[in-house]
Image (cartoon, rainbow, N blue to C red; front, side, top):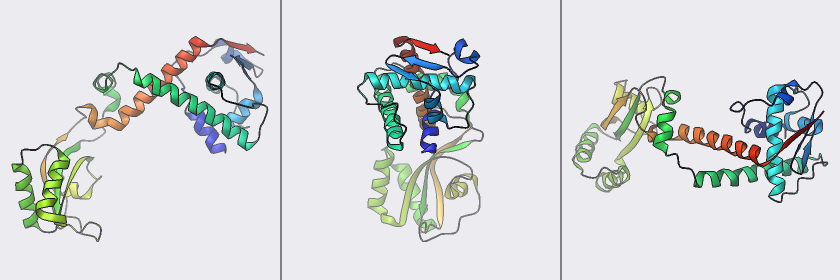
Length: 259
């Protein structure tokens, strides 16, 4: 339960908006009223745990939690704030997450920023700490099969990886495997051999290959397009949408403090 609460707290946005002077300066624990919701010290302890101090940062997160509770209540969720049972706490968490998820989906559907624009905006934060190989390698049971497969693949007109892999299996069966990779040295032992010239790995039952070759590809010093860092871009975009969600909640609701 504590783990779930802390995950929820971690999902709240942290540092992209200015602190409320009132929250930062409060010496006694404030109650916060947002819409039909009022939260206080008991709710704070429920969210963060009994050992968390009410400093500027935690109060900031707590304020955002109150905004999200107000949005969940407005959407029709039964929050039962006075109930501190485990079931009620989980129900409140789920109500907040459901309301936020629907809001983020709506924001994403109407978003005008493309992945390329986001990539260009965040390029510095997306830099790799080491070069990576981007391309295809073929692994085979014998060197002769690896040579044949590589020649066959390089002669194909199709650039679609899945079409190429299907055609390779149709012609040579399971004795060869084609994989598309974007990896740094040390992340894939067959790529380490085929790309960087490391010793050939010992075959295993799961990977019975005795040969590995690069079909096509190159070593990139840094990502060159959005697909090279798709997962990280998704995380950045999700954080951006969460910040936008909080900004919209702030514009919708008045936040009232009572010490």
